Length: 151
Image (cartoon, rainbow, N blue to C red):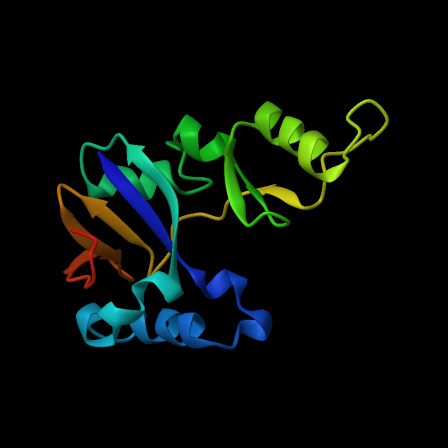
């Protein structure tokens, strides 16, 4: 089983902040050199746990739109911007919007704009696989050490 963590560069305003800086640094340098193990919880968010994977290459293919091998879990995962949380499944996301945000599925003609699919796995994102952490690099994966009480 694996756990997928996304680097929060996509949540920073105007692409300006520590996660965005790390995202850019990881394109040109050694991952471990740039990852501040003490700031993991501030820079990353857990997207999915208990993800069934054979290897890291499967993680990249199954969590990328357009790969032709997207996992069902990835394609059905929804993110609620208002709650800053994840919902497994489109129907569950609509139910969530109705119960928590006043969305009326009977009168609305579109899905709520604050509920969306998740972005693809990208440089800087981390997969915990077989009790080790790996950062998605520009080409391939690099094993990294993550501090704190994660292990």
